[in-house]
Image (cartoon, rainbow, N blue to C red; front, side, top):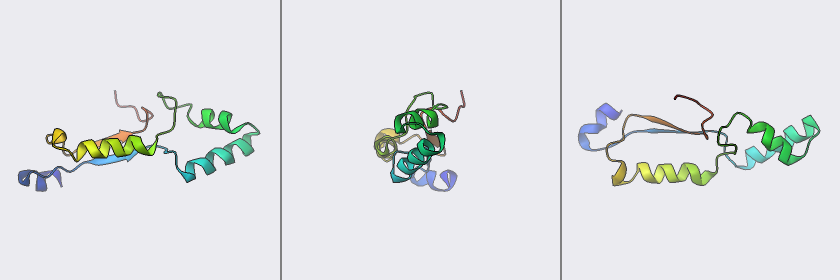
Length: 92
């Protein structure tokens, strides 16, 4: 798609959010806490153990990237997939 729309000045990218602090995340934290017999805070720490940044993605983290990609400042960023997951998906 980036090849198809690039000549028209249209950028095409994919934003791949990791686990994000939503209602579903809260359910997962609560379920993990019950299953492991630990506090909610301990369950959240357990779930984030493989995230180098040490926290769950906030919706604003994803929104900020989308706003940037839609701006003229990102006019030369096209044809890429960007993970917003605190480094959980390692590529470098």
